[in-house]
Image 1 (cartoon, rainbow, N blue to C red):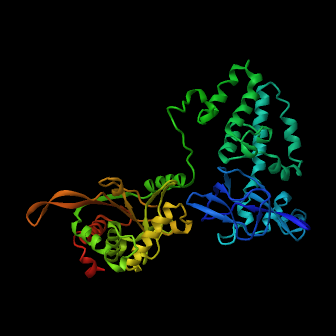
Image 2: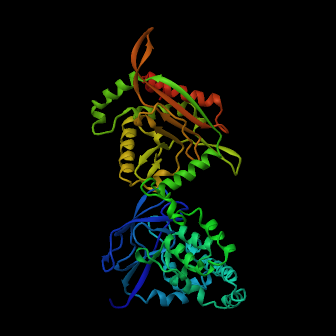
Image 3: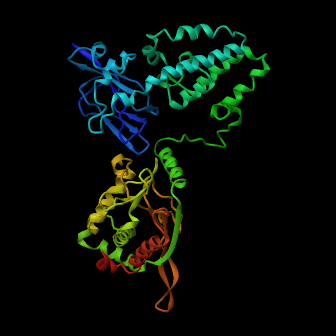
Length: 484
């Protein structure tokens, strides 16, 4: 290719403030021709799986990471050779970038491009995390120096320390020479005092694994077998890591699953919610026989042809009616400003279980939708979630949530608030139960509802009114006409 240059495509921030993403699948290989807008890979962030398009034409020169690797936002993931223009690496030193990155000419070409059109531009100054790797390398050298002292070479560390600081040109070369490794492996190496540049990688694509780091530690400690004082330090440092004690791990009796992606984000959000908002949960058991009959009638209605009609649709509508009657429940707590923010719109979240974990996409402006429109939105939301294609924007800005645990045969539960929201409604299984109806015990369709709310801004009276209104609509769905 004449007058060609190599452009590096960086991992974009496809959400708001995401720091990393896992490469799920590559759709191209080195040597393939790509065009502007072509999807080259699928990645999983802490919020959803997203397909990434390439923003220019060219030929794939290299894939920097194999599938299954978690990559920091702002890190180059694919090199593409494009036609025309001077080589980016030659223009970089003269570009404006030296004002902000004087020590990293090797990464200048990528800084001259937007991260990804359509997902927002992550500026180079906020995403160039690799610049902090130099201190990591220094920390690794310092830790190596400590090991040298344990070997009886106390004078040896002084010389590298004196020569390391003047060697300014070494800084830009460090990222290129250091083997690839996932963030947990980098942290493990740092904790154990291992310089990744000295480790021989055995993972696919030249990736350093945990086993490689521990092998390097074992090799470094081999001459220290006669020094009993140094022995306890290594096991103590590596005790929390899985590979440090392979003899105690029986894969036939245990399965270890890395916590990442959606599950990692969910765990962090739930812990934050549980220890930030004071939860209160109230319960009510209600006869939903008339609601179930209405569901069957709507299924035969031509206006709902092709739409998903189920009890959740009417439960969602009942909650929207209750919020209209009690608008203060649709609010959030602003800790910084010490204010309660009442929302005049409802972005209705629906908790959905997916193979990647629990996600809560929401229906924007659900309060303004008719029942058929709400049914269409629910159907689209569920289908997209099952396919794993829910976008990050669909999971942002929720105001109140419904979680349907009844689909698993569970009577009810005490749901945790979605962060930033003040209420969440759990719907239990709908089962035939003996019920006093018109003075006689009869089999009726019954369910239990549970409403959790943030007691900082929702008191018992407000929470009770909302739950009672939802129950009243489900018991007498004709109230949808008069209340809505």
